[in-house]
Image (cartoon, rainbow, N blue to C red; front, side, top):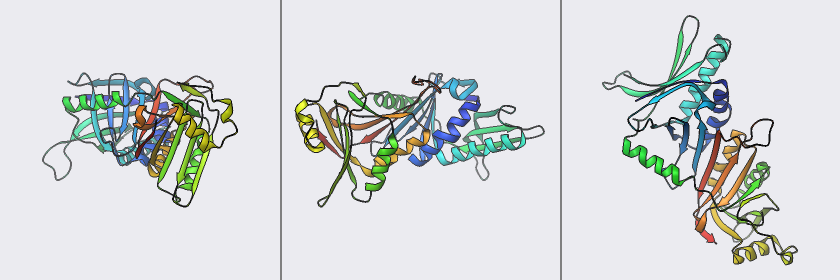
Length: 319
């Protein structure tokens, strides 16, 4: 089992400035899954209790001179502490910048190794970052779990494949800050957030208690997938009445999710997406958030990077 590569400048910027800060907020540990073509960060994928978060990168976006081999069809997966990985990347970049004129003149190598730690009798696996200066090399070791077995890799791949299913209707939120500001203000009101998404392009979020009901509505959003025209007679109704009628017609779905989970998913905005799409899985199985990244200077989706979250529902809501 071997893995070795050099991080590109773009790869370092993506990890250090955007994706690792976000994953550090999502939770303590995650799986790193390497294949011949892609690298995945998988948070909570095998545990249905919390927010699942999946980031995928095409190899050439992150690495040069990428080499991988294993008996699991050249697939390697292991878990690690995200904060330690983030710290190692930041430290390595700082060393490159301070002593070697930056990453352009001194590439940062990453590889899997086995080492014998102090006071141990068995070698342990590490993900190692190596920065070579003019007269010395600086090495940052990140401890990792034992790489997954063939059956465990298959289980991880199966979970990953099932997590890629798209909701039938997705609505696009161009400015996620509005959504974040509302939930930040309302998080002390209650613990449960009701989310309603319609085929007309409406997104409603609402927090209710026995004494108060507070909500926000986004209308006429771009719809991808199944869509329909809102009836003219609904235009003068309240948001609550419109959503109830849309649900009754089968033109909308509603689910309840944890406010804490919703706020955690919003940490993904640290990755600097250009927009976000919200959708509800069939039968209200989960709330899905897909973050869109555009090729700089264009309106084209950057297909070399993807990121999405799946939030477990507290109640199946209405279909």
